[in-house]
Image 1 (cartoon, rainbow, N blue to C red):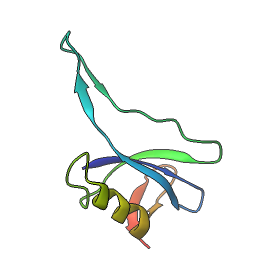
Image 2: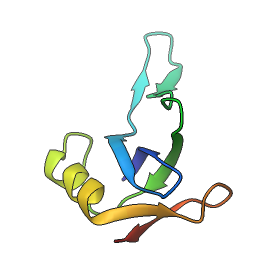
Image 3: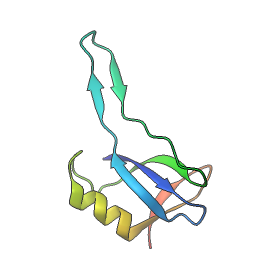
Length: 80
């Protein structure tokens, strides 16, 4: 599942959330969005551990077990 991660310059994940889409009454679609705090970066990455948007255990596992590498041009999740 696609997730949004907020991470620091060392790749440590500060926060993580599933990316969700919503369809509006007029048929248009929108995606969740977040703004990184000062000193942090945001990336949308694929996380196989997260099964659905409300998979709290999967999100927690990614935050605790992974870091972001390949930044800033090609960020990806890597096991710690």
